[in-house]
Every structure is written in C-alpha cells, then in structure tokens.
Length: 134
Image (tube, rainbow, N blue to C red):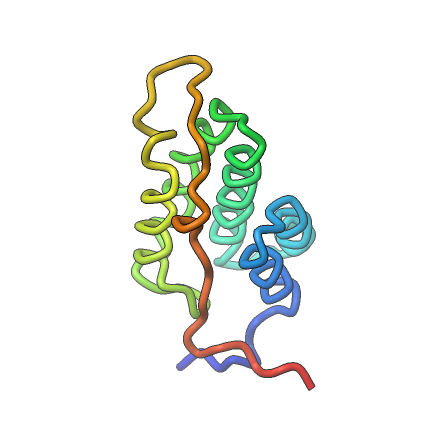
C-alpha cells in the first residue's frame, strides 16, 4: 500500500516545518507530543527526529558535547527505517545530518570551538509532499 500525503500526522508536518525553519527546540517539542501519544511502528523514527532536532539545537547553542552525544543516537533510531520512511529519504537525511555535524562527531576535545555552518543544515522534504494548506 503506497503512502498518501494525507496519511501524514499533522504534528509530523508541523515539526518538519519548524525544523526546516531552524526552530529546532520547537520542532522537538511538537514531535515529542506526537511521540508521547504514538504507539505504532514509527515510534522510534519519531524519537530519532526528536534527537536530531535536539542535536542541532545544542550545536547552534555551542553545546558541542551535547550535540556529539546525540549524534550517534540519531543513527541508532533512524537507520532501521532506511532507505525511506513516512516520505523521508532517511539515508539522504542522515548523510546531510552527518555532513553538518562532521566536525562535532570527529572532535576529541572536551570543549571544542566549532561553529555551525548554515549552508550545511539538513532539511526535510517529503515524497509524496505534504498536502498544501487550504
């Protein structure tokens, strides 16, 4: 059975909108609300998105240790859903996420001075796309 764009939970879409606007804390909050209620096969997928948003939130606030800690957990949650889940190219998203956090992941310093590169921020684009707001 093919996924239809109408099948997306509105909170999933709201979280994506906030994530793509670099409102990582807000996207985490929206997805956490969804994750708390949800009891289906995508539960860990939503948890992975929450972790990705929090990792980027930490990175943006220069909490490199927090971002590094969450980086690996994002893979643990999302990789089982690769290559594609709920319209998201999971493999592509993880590659973009890794590019953005490459210096964070490879640093061995306790308090490294690593700046976030806005050009490397991952975005989420769905296929099929979300239905247009009416």
